[in-house]
Length: 242
Image (cartoon, rainbow, N blue to C red):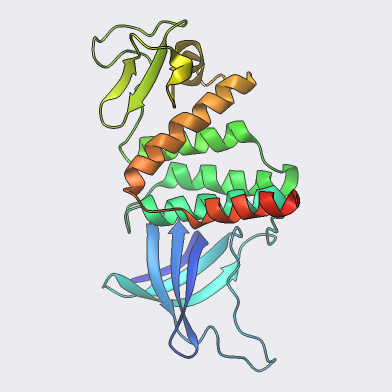
């Protein structure tokens, strides 16, 4: 099978043998694709190798019938994206969760377009927490892990705005009874969950609640695998306070 001029982004790159790379791509029509880029580390006539930049959209050519494709060509399709400071760590985080959670060669065209737009916004405007939370929710939805946020999973009744809930992956929301919500880690207020379900992120508290919610669910589906991007960001914050 030969694919030509497929829009995509580089998620992850690993040196391979003497002059090649193992490359994981996130593409518009073929989802996550793993390729070997033969000779991409070998200096060309001008003394430079064929670098592959993250966060920048390419047009890729590859071929092959097995799981590991041969990447033949990578042409930059738009102005290269340069992320700095906090936006850089958000980019690392997004690439890492896509790399770890997407099934190979399953198409996620709508998610691809969201990712593409988010890369542009990160480069031009910096980090928008509500946009990041929307992307995480969309990712879970398109993976088949969509969150039901309008009812109590145990009783099937609508949420109460003044109640507190916990979200149990693959089950849903359960109201917290008999304990003070402030004593329970991960407690989620009904009013904020209802706002998330309406796609209303106008309140800072709603954005914070969405972060706690999506982080817990994403961690569940990571099945214990740690995200290196989070550790790098923690180190960045520590270095900035010393």
